[in-house]
Image 1 (cartoon, helix red, strand yellow):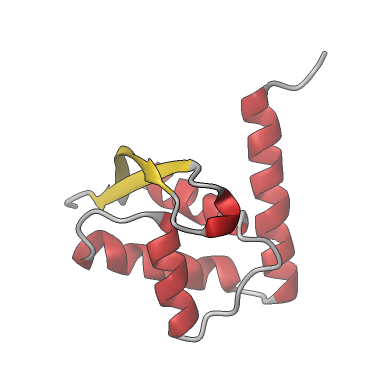
Image 2 (cartoon, rainbow, N blue to C red):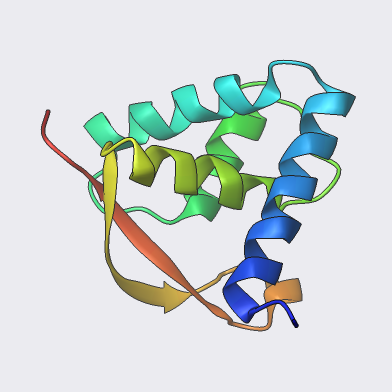
Amino acid sequence: MEATGAELRDAGIERATDNAEAAAPGWADQALDYVKWFAKHGGRFKAEHVRDYATKQGLPNPPHARAWGGVIRRAATMGLIKRVGFASCANPSAHCAPVGVWVGVSQ
């Protein structure tokens, strides 16, 4: 049986997150801490906002930016953030692809 698009997406995100952890153990937990900060202080945000801020604070870039998808998904599953819409990605290499817009969920 062929994998669904969602299954292939999830597998790719998991591989990217695993590679980030192999390159920098603890990376995913540190990245999640930045998502938590944005959930409390960032209003509406995109993953690229968190990624840019975290990089400026010294978090190493993962081998593939897709690893951030696993961190955002984890935060959403934990009930820390929720998607409130979509916007174009500002990264030129993403060709204005639509990405999630997120807000923190009051705990």
